[in-house]
Image (cartoon, rainbow over all chains, first blue to last red; front, side, top):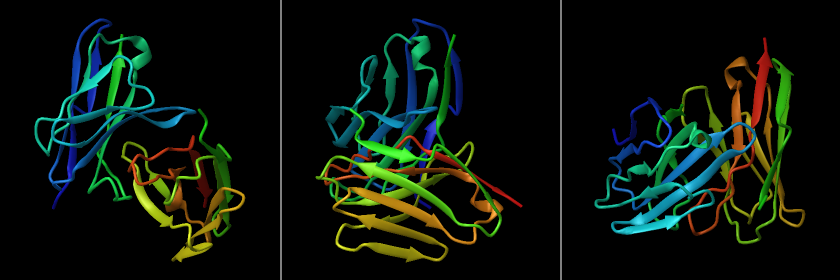
Length: 113
Length: 111
């Protein structure tokens, strides 16, 4: 079955370190998204991509970057981890810009100490 | 910018009761109004969604009511079950495909 997987599921890192969270989907979806989930805020959009070589900033993009070199993967990089980036991160994909249903990964819980 | 406001933040319902969660939005470009369900340790998953050309959609025990003029939509869970205990998010979207999430409602259904 097609799926979307995130790795690692849990990570603890130190302030100032660079961290990369992986997202891989096997649906061949064009759209991919990164969200962070914090209590009281729901899920907020960090970055998104509509296809290979396309990346766009979301609502809370400061301190994060993404790259899209193929259809299947959209890694999220924290350039210099900060305690404020302690959160649960979700990757999602959807078929096209016009498609409405998004499919989510299981999430990565990141703790910055 | 608070585009989507969801209420209540938490809800406790007895088994067999009705759960109602509300969502208000500002962006008139939204054209798809879904509710996502999230269990602990899992990602959100689409539960039910409605397009603005209808005012109500029912799927089993779950119903969406949509009021375009008021820019509001709500989720009704009939005959609530303990297995419905989860966090629910409204997440309206437009043709950008970007979901704009509400703050979430934690539902607890007591046996």
